[in-house]
Length: 321
Image 1 (cartoon, rainbow, N blue to C red):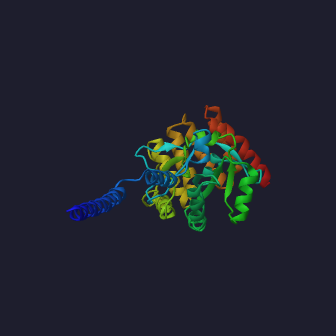
Image 2 (image 1 turned 180 degrees about the horizontal axis):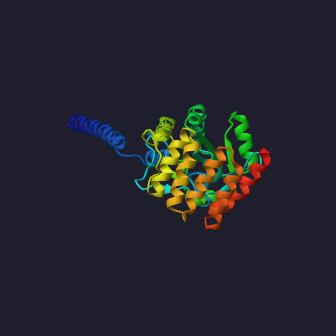
Image 3 (image 1 turned 45 degrees about the vertical axis):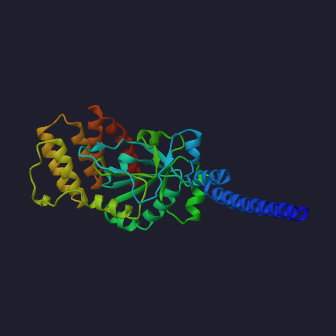
């Protein structure tokens, strides 16, 4: 009897051990399974760090003074604008890298369209934009366009950058941000197309692969050909006359322009802008005395541009003699 009882006890203990081990194994399997399914805190922190590391960096100027932001280019979509009511370009004078003075109105009076680009050497979009514009300088020239680059950086920084990239842009130094503020530039690159009559016909913020083609297209769409050479009577309004003047300027028909402005002045003797425009035509014909006389007339009528041009034309006339 005693032996049978001990055998039963041993069997019971063995069975209990087996059951315990089976339950332990099942518990471990269940624990490992749910542990793998549960999000791990370290992984969540890692993903958050990756997201933060992948976010676009803030530019130096954004951190420092919140003035200018570089335009990013994630998907070739850039903010661009045109306006049904054309704004007039604000005149300014800045020095270039060579130390020469550049005046916007003076360049326009020579029949030039202006491509005015605000940039910085540290801005990635600007770097791409400058490269694209560089390949189009000859095409721009055929459209009577002059490219002016404006930078707020120190002269030495810009000179080094232009030299290293073998660029030959005319760069204007705007260290005090006078012109940048005048044109309300808050992103770079920002490019304006200024027609030779002073109208801003296009504004592009940022850059893209087709930026050059877009700029050239805007320059080419300056007006319809209407047989201007046969026109003997000027339009009745100042704006229409200025528009006709610009079309004729593109064909270098300054002789016709002078005649048309003379007829316009006979009907509108008190229009200061008419004298200023005729003075510009005289300048292109090499008639400096007449150019100065008309600029002075515009000045006497209270047109500030006339006063400024009197001195400039006199200086140019003196240099040409």
